[in-house]
Image 1 (cartoon, chains in turn red, purple):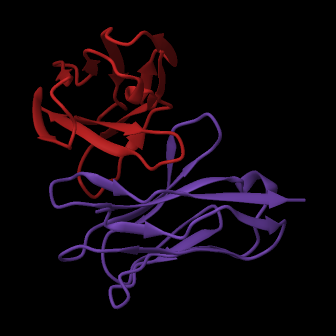
Image 2: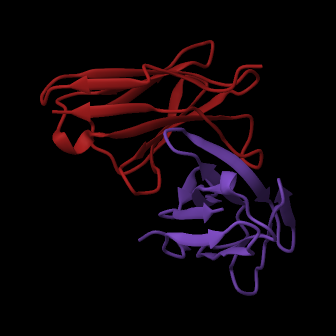
Length: 112
Length: 111
């Protein structure tokens, strides 16, 4: 049983560009959350999707947007990239609030 | 501010030593609590969890007890191994099903 799958694993972009990161949740999970983990820090919540809608959002600008598809997979889009967007982006899926989240291995984004 | 506080690392131990990583939280009510582990170059793995006060989560020799009196969820292991070297994150669940993480504690175990 595959866990959470993220692609790509690594990405290098230039300031001002746009990027799309992808996530396939663990089988049976319907809730997907995205987190940003800066170097040496704990993950910070970006937003959460359930039933193809953004259910809640963390303290991130509108440059960060997302989508969830009918098969529960999800995308994270970041526009107008800044150097400070360089981080590990983690996708996590869950089947309920007390089950805990299963995390993917992340996408390492470097903005130059 | 962050409502999950962990002891700063790195924590450096010899193999077979006893491990404690402190974690305290602030929250209304009794949130579910978690410990995640992150090995170099990887994502987070759920290590253990506790969903109500006085519960003890355990996995792979690690334990943590949900202490509502001290709002703590300290991670312990009786005998660490070199393979336990990683970064450990304490986290709590909000009432909107969002995880809030501590800043992480790096554990280094030497033979």
